Amino acid sequence: MPPRIDVIVVCWNDKEKIATALDSVFALGEVQADPGFANVVVSDNGSSDGSREFIRERYGGRVTIVENNANLGFAAACNRAFDKTSAPIAFLLNPDAELKDRALANIVAFLDAHPRCGIAGSRIYNYDGSIQQSCGEFDTWTGAFLRSSAWGELPPFRRFANGAALRGFSYDRPHRIDIAIGAALAIRRELFAEIGTFDERFFLYHEEVDFAKRAANAGWETWFVPSSEAVHEGMGSAKGQYSVESRKQVSRRKYWIKHHGYSWYFTLVAALIGRFVLYLVAAGGALFALRAIIRRK
Figure 1 (cartoon, rainbow, N blue to C red):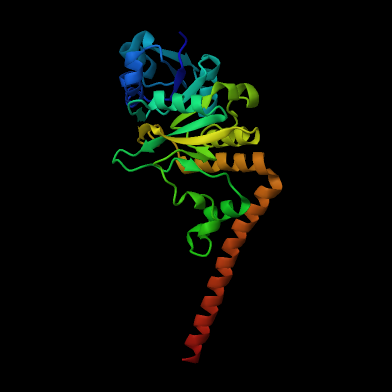
Figure 2 (figure 1 turned 90 degrees about the vertical axis):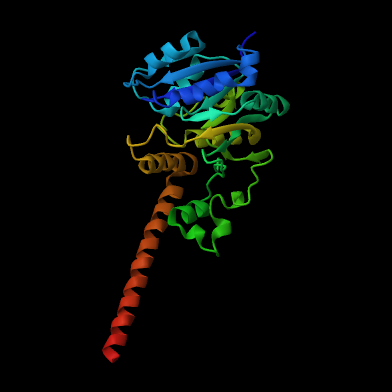
């Protein structure tokens, strides 16, 4: 019998962490009961820390390694693994994440029961047991401005900011959503045939947002599935190796231009710059008023 799901882990110098993810897959009750239930693939982006050798020694033939021979980025590494696999569902798992029992079985069951669900995200916990905010909304111009300017935290504007609808989000039941983060994410392979795989112009971050947007435009659904659970450290591969915020800003800019156009993007930039001009005018006015008061004294 072919596997029901391909578990894909992208690796870049993750020797110290990747066993967390892989061990958790092989410890799942559904995998122990049926080792053929899941096919496990590591897409290695030219690791130089001995990751490939470690995986071969620890797991042998239970894990297939796709050797990319260079750091191609997350989207491209996933695409190389998609090309080498064929199960009806691909499940992306970060190397610093671990699955809880029945995580794969439950998400497969959910997809079986919801044929228009093309993307499904697991419920993700931090190591302290708190729940990570793993769902998001597609940007609007107003929402993007308020989030980028931090004005979205001011009471009059909070309900218009990007993600405002998720502030009271219940992580205890399934929801149809716009975006689920890629740390523990199932994708129906049928979707690739219709909209293509990840856009490799997104080297890191926002590739899953772009993919979810394209899926939604094609009439597919994205769901949050709390019965599939994972624990995620977050930015495990990033620590000390690059600026996460800088990479996110670059990818966010590419996403905005791709899906909203240059006019949308440049008017947003102009508004954000105008905000600083407003601050300077206000500060200058306050200074002028203060100096006038001092002179009167």
